[in-house]
Image (tube, rainbow, N blue to C red; front, side):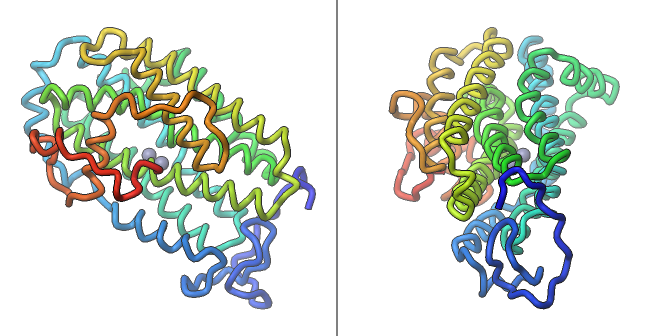
Length: 348
Ligand code: ZN
Ligand code: ZN
């Protein structure tokens, strides 16, 4: 296989081939999915975890946040809306990208997971719209989306991801699929976190708790997506050793390092006036996340090893795994005291 030859869009049904595919790309596969007969049985666990996370925006009653909205400072409101539309923009890009990958992946179990991820990105996108519609009129929503589209720092951030995604759309080679995967990890596993930190910080101050409940559902999904895509890349490299080059490993470190710098830069723009967020601590947190993403890829840390420097982000998310869908932000004493590492969640 030449890593620069375009992948073919595969036929829907190939009856002469087995159901269990011979490869995640360029494989022989009938196109039919029997979960009992798949090449990587752990994919069924990932699929099940994604499904068990299922939620929808309307399950969260926004009344408390609607009442509280007017008591936020002008800066808090401004940052809230800027972050909301910027995160919605990322999810808008991820929905079609995850669907597009399905056309070229030849293992039906992976296609099914990409389909679920694409669906979840659509739910995230809708949930940001749901928040906006609860809080501000359509004219203001449109202003904010235009702001996100025209903001040079947002554009610079998105360019890194978009170049890789467009590269694959124009020329769907194995090499470009690899690059798309690395950039998806940045989108899913690094780019959301300045925004998430802002909402969790509000929650720490007992503000906009319903919003943060929704954000924590989104974060839980995104962590699973980043984890799955890391697994996808590892399998892609293992099955296609011609992709497993020094250049490509450099590409991973450089691209993740670049995303870390862009996330730090964005945090300085968006969070500098927000009380309760220490930007040095946030920078350390982004590096901590990057190390985690690299380890999921089976690679070495890019930054010094450290404990989670913003455990209040971890606590909220850790709690999510163990509890049912309750408004746990309001269960203050438990939320702040209970941290367990036992479920392996830390490696997500
Ligand atoms: Zn999303
Ligand atoms: Zn995602």
